[in-house]
Each structure stands twice: as C-alpha cells, then as structure tokens.
Length: 152
Image (cartoon, rainbow, N blue to C red):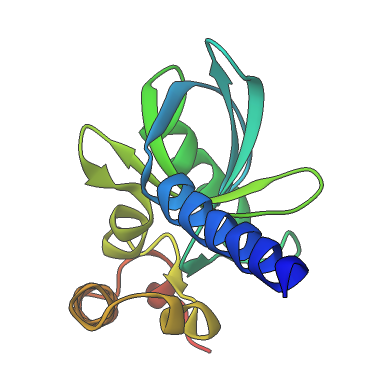
C-alpha cells in the first residue's frame, strides 16, 4: 500500500512537471538555420538548442523550393530573439511552437506558403488553434503562395 502511494505521488509530480514544462516559454537568439523548419537558438542559461517547428512540413532536400523555404526561415528568424514552448524532445532536438514578437513562426510559414500543415500533429492542438492553421493553409493554397504555386 505504501509503495502504491509513493508511485501515485511520483506519477502526479511527473504529470504536473510536464504541464509546467510545456507551458513555460523559453528564449534565445537564433544563430543558425538548418532547414526550413529547424534552427538553432543560443540561450543564456541552456546553451545551444536545436528547435524543430511543430505543426508544419517542408519540402525535402531533393524537392523544388527546398532552398527557398530554408532561406525564407533564415530571413524570419536568423539573429533575432525567439521564444518557444517546448512540446517534445528527441535526442538532438526540441520540438516546439516558436514565436517571433508573439507571432507563431509555424503559422507564418503556412501563411507565406513556405510549409504545409502537418496532419498527424493536428491532434495535439486544441480545436480553435487547429482551425486557424487550417484556414491559414487554405488561404495560402487559394493564393498559390510558395509551395502551392507548383502543381502536384
């Protein structure tokens, strides 16, 4: 019985810690862009963190517009202060929702036609945010911006 209580306390602590972690914005200066959805931030207290933008997909290196999309992200973030909400971790990267002056960078990439909405990730968004992403992507498609300017 005592071990069950300890287990439940540890489980509760982990759940609360995850909630706090996922709600805390961190920040730093973007110092390198790796591709159209991945960049490196230099933080004052955590060093370099590689950020992968959540909710979007970009062209693969062999596809048209890959380099254009990378350059677009460079113009958006390089040498600027970026805030981010960590949403997941891999060995080398932090999957995050990132912001430049309160502008959601993934949403801006969708609006500019530099990315498309990642359907598998939409389940992790609340309904209101998901609708904004879908409408933003739809508008870029209608206007044939960026990746939507190429057939297929």
